Length: 126
Image 1 (spheres, helix red, strand yellow):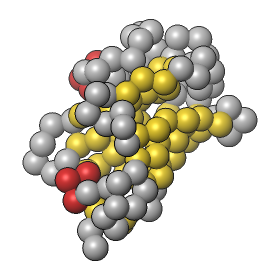
Image 2 (cartoon, rainbow, N blue to C red):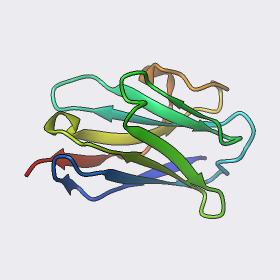
Image 3 (cartoon, rainbow, N blue to C red):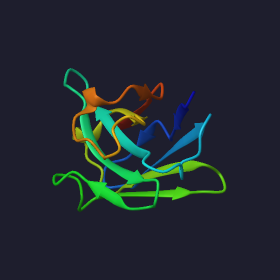
Image 4 (cartoon, one colour):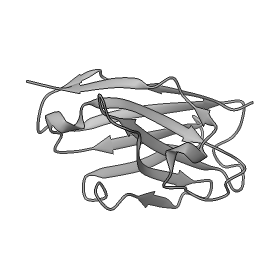
């Protein structure tokens, strides 16, 4: 069974760049038709799909974040990364990586995903 684990800095200052890691075990990130998404949930709000990287390396982003977010991967480490620049306090959220082999596409709807990491808290504050 696929397992996902996010890690990150916890606290980031405004205007800085966020770098998060999603380590995947129990399956390869290059397995055909797997899409690896990043989702975030600000305090008191619903989950927001941010973007995804496909098994073949193609990337997809939400319109609202595509100018600031970048998703990449390291096949040897079986790891997916999220970078986002120009952070603001409004970016404070729990950040998750998620996948679901049944989907075979990068769904915009977080409720479509069945496999989630535990999430990592990111607080943007000076």
